[in-house]
Image (cartoon, rainbow, N blue to C red; front, side, top):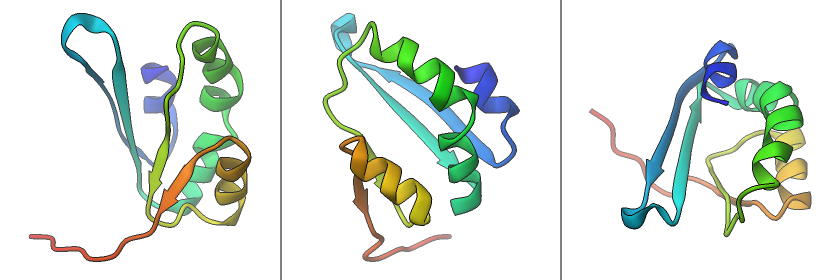
Length: 92
């Protein structure tokens, strides 16, 4: 999945984080903009590889931070995703 995500235009980070004891993980993905997020959600990583992942793991939740655009918002709603809009940002 990481190699396929890396090949996608607009994917900036694709990082797996593991819990102590190996009984869970968090996957953090970031994209340059809403269009790049849509490319990911409609591309081979989500359409071909995520179903294989779902066959061997149990998802407890997934969250999208920021506005992913209307198409991904609709897809996320169907799949149980939660969209969290920005409330405040401080960057350096």
